[in-house]
Image (cartoon, rainbow, N blue to C red; front, side, top):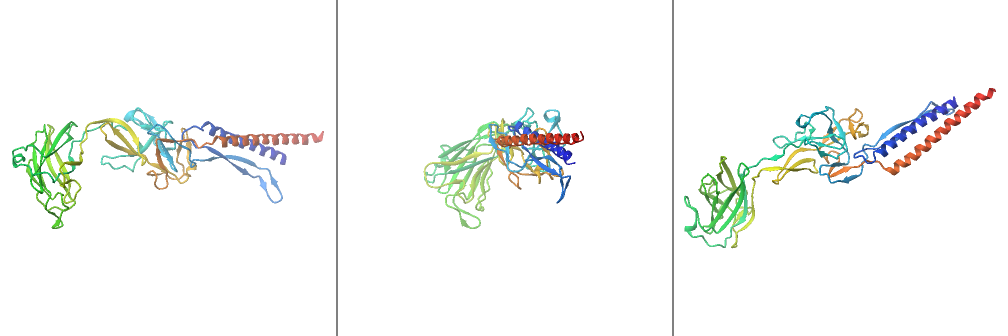
Length: 452
């Protein structure tokens, strides 16, 4: 029994070392595969009988020891859509079953991977080198993320529609050192002014994204009052508009003196809407509104001048030069697709040539209680098992998952030098087991020859 058992044990050793050699071969072959996780070998002893007085030879079994949680080297690449996870977690991906464009059908099963070499395919989907489609949370119409469902991310918003200007922000100083303007130069109801003391022009956009022009002309009326004329050339709406801005007075709660040189009231004189004489609450927005019409209907525009009683926008301090600190508007011209970027929080941002950006989805990170128990599939993919636990979908860098490293990929976690060491050990152990088989065979042959 001992000789036969020794041979059986040696044969099991041959089988185990063959499997170990297969693991080494797989690891070396995939040493350059993006997101690949090596397979080590765990040898387990199986006993036939073992007591204090007797031990019979058993066998050995080689089991795979997965390293799904062992980080590979993160390497920066030129692909802006590539991503790596620094820490625990996986990308959620899908497999296509057929179709193209918006008619692509996907496997209902959920897959996971660490291979983040994603790129845009012809249909606008983000696909990695193994052909898996990146999934994420889509952005709903209200701008919120739909965290209830993961779906393949597709970039189909190739045009950014124009947005008509609805707000102009002005931050400037009207120099209090200028003399009062002659009454004949001042704009009044029914008459435009002449020779403004300060002037500024801003470009705005109509409903079709055409660039239009608004001119703001200023005259100093008295110590605390300036008159503004708002001109909108090409507009069918009544123009110009005229209003008076007062820098002397009080604001609520009150009466509390406003900061010197800040707005305390605005009075509408012609073709504008103003809040009136006040007093107003300090810190509330101060503005005057006007209407333009470029053939596409009335376009209401609000001219924001800062806050009541606070030096945050338009002021009137000492000086003789009109100094603009900010003159901006919220309109947007028509924009064409120019590229896609992924931010560190996972947001997929579509960029347009008009300088605008639209968030279309967010890439989450999926975690498991025991990632080494995931089922391995082709293309560096995994599938959930009962032993791995449920998939926990969460934002990157939160709840124990790793952070996203954009413009990078995770290389294989195979160490060639270590694999060669394992190769030598497997080869020597295999050879040693063959010697045991040979010795057992010779001893059995000697036993058979005893009766001759």
